[in-house]
Image 1 (tube, rainbow, N blue to C red):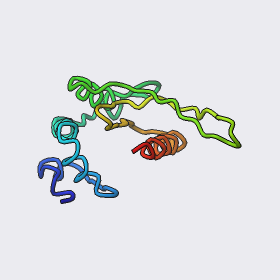
Image 2: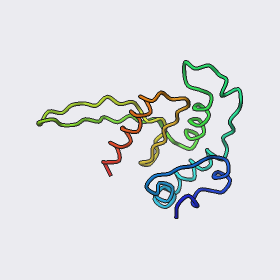
Image 3: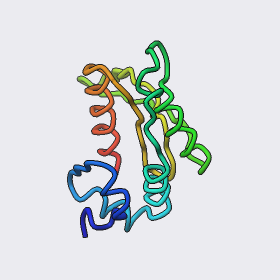
Image 4: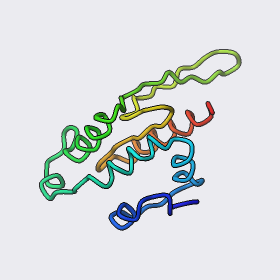
Length: 131
């Protein structure tokens, strides 16, 4: 099982890449969360006005995706992450994950800056260690 677990309508609408059989894992281990994400992607419509809206806050694109998932019980969640150096705990500043439900996180970004994208990927990498 791989990308074929993603409904054809969603695959036809988006260019999808995956790593480590993510869609198969989500579909089998977290079927409700997988369905929420697929329904969100299927329902989303990108409008020209969304693209042309100036920056300075959350875009209408992020707001629409977040609202859909929050309507399905997803919530913003923060994590306290720290590393230990020679026995001394060092907190790692992190931000909240936009949407989190039953161990599944979905970060929604539109036109994100590289340094924030890197930070988000690192946070998810650190959280995966908790498995």
